[in-house]
Image (cartoon, rainbow, N blue to C red):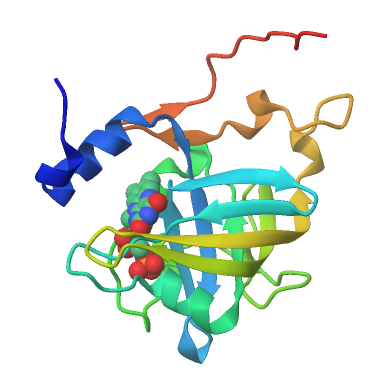
Length: 202
Ligand SMILES: Cc1cc2nc3c(=O)[nH]c(=O)nc-3n(C[C@H](O)[C@H](O)[C@H](O)COP(=O)(O)O)c2cc1C
């Protein structure tokens, strides 16, 4: 099968793309809505892109009716967000926080997650997750303009919180302890428990 993107509907392309570019890590993002309401939503258009300075990108796309999602609105207004770890323990809660609640309602309350103040940014982080990355926005780059078009939010990580219990004997994050979950296409998710190791070539 070969798909000519120019002649294919956006939703069809979206389904194909997210089914092929897998697995995608999940950023469980806290931002502040007006009035101090804490917004929480998952984003699998997410990754890390460098370490000096540490940089992550998330993409809250425009919705299928072409509107900005609350997370993007909050990020554009405040310039700050927190990426909270997405792990097996919270897989169901993560999914539930993708519900399209109005900005005055908090997904944090919906799933009963506790928050704690962040160190350097205004949005709080989730208390019960193994790590959290406090981020300040460097740039927001819209790519396209219609439904499901990307908004590349480039965030500089200014504080890293990690539960000591998630580190191995050498002080590195231990995937067996973190137990991250990730997104595949459709309704498929995956665990990170089937590991194998390979040393890097010299
Ligand atoms: C695991 C998962 C990953 C998601 N990834 C994205 C994403 O990368 N970009 C996006 O725009 N929406 C994504 N969504 C949908 C958003 O979470 C959903 O639109 C949410 O309502 C946005 O919340 P907000 O309006 O509070 O920002 C994802 C949903 C799930 C369950």
